[in-house]
Length: 142
Image (cartoon, rainbow, N blue to C red; front, side):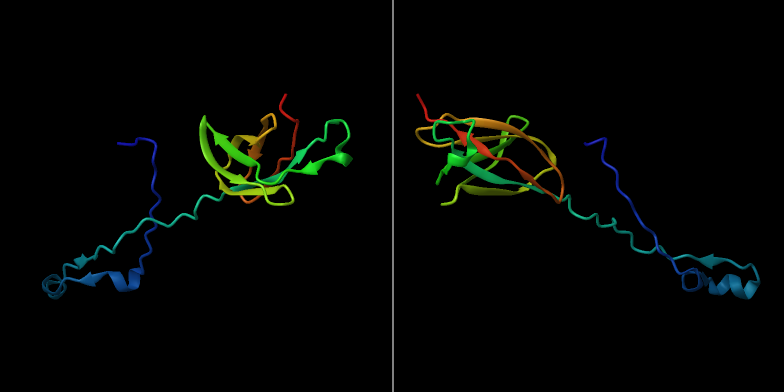
């Protein structure tokens, strides 16, 4: 049993149509009425919105201080990790770009890796309905 779950219910009743006199009591002048119980259903909540992590993975071309000579890395793997578990992963395209949609809002650790390069990590704060830009610059593996 989950103790911290709440449910909102909305009861919409048209009083002029809901109360009906009980035939025997109306004739006797007692004024008793029946109130039918309408069906009750939970109010639908909008789905929890997700965010996106997107960016580019670059080869720093041996000069990390100079981003102008960077080259995009095709086929690098970018992984989003929350709470120690992989949320999802994707690969970069020919321009080194990637996008990981439908990430739950939270602080996320992103990692980019490619064969022949040192893996890079970066924190990212995912905000519902927004895209978080995370750019990686990978150095060659020793």
